Image (cartoon, rainbow, N blue to C red):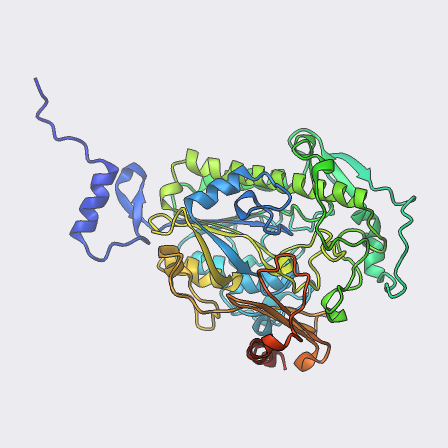
Length: 503
């Protein structure tokens, strides 16, 4: 005999009923578990440091193994050509989290706290905090040593590590063969700065962690992010989890090193032992000293392969930690009403043109960074977007997805149209700048669908470079090519207009 009791209202049926009953219900109002109540969407904000577009889903040239971020990309939209505003931690993060250009933040170096100059600005996490969200941080979100209490709830990890990776870790240190390095130093190589000398030994080591890395800050930041998810699963949250890897020194447990064979690593075609300006490029295009690895000395091919292997191991370990966070989100049943953002502060060069850092790089690998946005219900999910976008665009995007209104002055452009249709019309260039002294702009780059262009010095007084994306290794400068005059004129006007904001 069949029961006369009505069939239970399933989640799918409930959503359909709500959608039919009220035209005002949209993505920002989504179901809260079995309680059948509508709640605001959560945000899980993930950041890594110095992670260039070397993920498997970005067709890693070195064969990086990143299964967790690859899977995240399949669940959302992978932005293939996203660019940071400054290839250095603090200026990039300050720009991204305030939604304003470096010219507006005034942050052009790693020692400037944006909040001191702009006490009344509302940051991205602060916007959510002021709209009833629990906002929590674990690990590095703002730059090391600089945090923003206004962004986070009272119990957030404001006392947790935000450093650049120089803290001790439980494991063993492997020194590179510094003593026998006999690669001739170029005559024009500058003497290391005092700050560089202080980092030189730190830059010549690889750290192999015990176990799964339980003794390292990134492991603990991951654990704290997981705990934050558990504690706030029943209320709207903006939870940020930041890793300091693969920032130097390259660090990972042994099993991640075992994923890669240095003998199988093929160095870039423009690999050089020391920072080297290619023929036809302005001297200002390559910073003469490395700031992260191989500081004050040359890199042999064998050492370069060993460091690239270590970087890949560090990257794979970061992917493993992100995977732990995302699995917990799924275990808690929160994926269907959580916006996941994964982004990196800036790019990195691994020996291209002899450069082992990001500082000063206005090349593609210095400023192009991973960006994955997985937002429930977006028609573009599972696709990649080839439009030119900026990290500056993240603030207005996440705000719109959550139905929040940012304060006036936000300078990015919401990417929601591209989340709905990754091939939608989009004609917006991306800009990146570099300052050598933290006060003056020494280079401005613009990236369009067709070209990457950069000028150095005021009005290009120190030279310019025009790069064709078809030349993937950026081996030729087309700035003086007769058949590119019109492109140079157009792009030069864009860079100078952008630079004018800096005075």
